[in-house]
Image 1 (cartoon, rainbow, N blue to C red):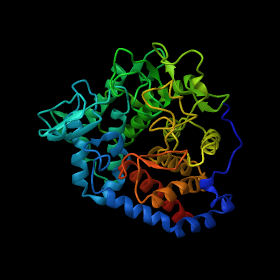
Image 2 (cartoon, rainbow, N blue to C red; image 1 turned 135 degrees about the horizontal axis):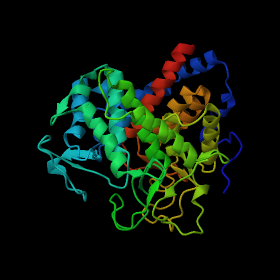
Image 3 (tube, rainbow, N blue to C red; image 1 turned 180 degrees about the vertical axis):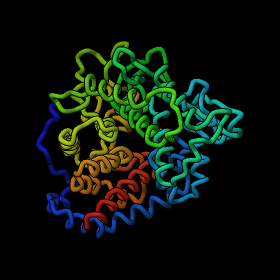
Image 4 (tube, rainbow, N blue to C red; image 1 turned 60 degrees about the horizontal axis):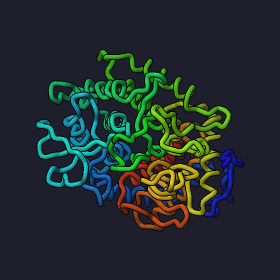
Amino acid sequence: MKLLLPAFISLSLFVGLNANAQVTDNAALAKSILADSRLDTIQSRALKLLSGFSAGTSYNEVWIRDFNTFIKGSLKAHPKEEVKAKLLMFFRIQGDGGDIVDGVVDSTKANVGYKYRYSPLLRGWAAHKNTVETDQESSLVQAVKKYVDVTGDKTILTEVIGGKTVLERMENAFSYIQKDRWAAQYGLVTGATTIDWGDVQAESGWGVAINDKTKWCVDIYDNAMYVKALHDFIAMKPKSYTAKQNWAIVAANVTKNVRKYLWDKKAQKYIPHIYLNGSPFASDFNEKEILYLGGSICAILAGFNTPAEVKEINQQMVAAAAKEKYATIGITVYPPYPTERYPNVGAYSYQNGGDWTWFGGRMMGALINYGYVNDAYHELSPMLDRAIANKGFFEWYDVRTGAPKGSGDFRGEAGVLYDAITALKQWAIKNK
């Protein structure tokens, strides 16, 4: 399937917007944004939901990959000390090798099929790590940066936990990736084969744990998250602090290697995977036809692309979403992997072609950063409409039926929408 389609193809979800989709006057666009009552409605509802810290009301755990995306909203709903304490939990149960867990949970509720770890530095809590994904370390550093940006409180960086400061522990997390999750021949971060940003591997068995069938690979999501975290660390560390490595050089080298190995210049898109010990897919399957939307968004946020490439990537996303009646640019991948190729996650379900505002909503900040504000506003609009229509923040949506799926109180979606709306409002206020 060829995904380089015309620049903008209307979706049924966009019908009500296309009449004025080509607004070019900044003042007029700003006026429209500030007059849109949906923005206030969504933010108000989001803050109510962000009264808690778990990924959603159907989850017991506080997940760092989720918390990273709703921490700004949390800081509006909680005292900063409470948010800070939750962040520090992940450092208190950090592995000896520097690795960061996925989730922490009250030890009395540690009853899922994970392999739990415990620490005397975090009594009463258990934690677990998804071993097929490589985004936990990066997510925690990014979350700390958001905390510092919003509160101005840099004391978190010098907090001492088990004889090490948070700054030292963040560096240990970076070093863990270089030691245990590194493809030396490419100079890039590695992980198990998953779908885009997903955390369920293709191979049979417990999908979130490495096993003897795991196929190791390099992908855009893990590397984008790592570089973004490195940039965040560099930006917030005190000038007086002497880092263990020149992390700016590390970030520059990963960026260069992403462009060399993962960016398809001709197709103007990122390839899904580079395999290190064989592919989980048969040779007759052309995986490169699949567009990875979430990882591409993270790549833009990491600064991997030029403004022209950002525009082209966005056009491909809109075109892909237009192929399904109820899709937005939150669709994880397109086309989805056929179920027979990826039995752990069937086609059009969950992370295999499900539509996640949790990731699609992040594109709005990226577009605004590059000056594509009109695109951001109109691509966000159907996400707002369905959140209002479904009276909740759902994990994902079926692009064929429009039905909401998963937790109906998913804080990741609430946080991403809150941040996207904040970015739009800030731009509008400056340009009204």
